Image (cartoon, rainbow, N blue to C red):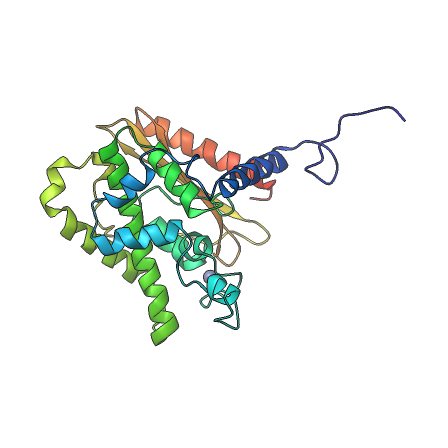
Length: 286
Ligand SMILES: [Zn+2]
């Protein structure tokens, strides 16, 4: 038998974008996990930024616990024999890790999309909250932006965590819209004296007044929607693509920030992002 090149990250031994992408994500995850005992892979000012975000100390402390996986999630409680289940208490669909709780559960994804920050990682694209925090910092050009964007993300997660706890301890059903309302109110309160200093792309967007009607995909298909939000002053754009199934449930989505000079260019980038997401997932019936 002749020698031949084999891509051992896929079952067929042939390279494809999906398996290459998965391998890259796993490699990054293992690299960070292997460096968990040191902070060599973190930016030098990582913890300094966390502890100087423009949010109340209780939220900074919360974010520190999130990055160190110290929250009392079902997964962590189960590992310590303090819970009889590691399942997410809200969807019961998967293990309740910090990342599942904050980014992957359907209702939390609804919160992120409604917050319109352009920060939500795609399902399976956020191996750890610490890595995600690093990626947020890398999007910024200076320390002030880093503090603001990490602070805003931490506030969203804080209110998600509070709503989750109200369900667990008081059986109050989670309500994404109510959580978004609390986030906006909170931002307004803490940003009041800072409004003139905030970069347009990081400024609190107004609450949406009305939304166009969205219809589920037709039988046998998934539906993908994409759009762009352009901050003209800074020349940066948040672009997003979301994928829904027949029942209208969120299947996957991705949000990235990119340079852009016009609405048209931003929308073109959004279409390309949607195509890449479908290509990565190996989907064609959309
Ligand atoms: Zn869940």
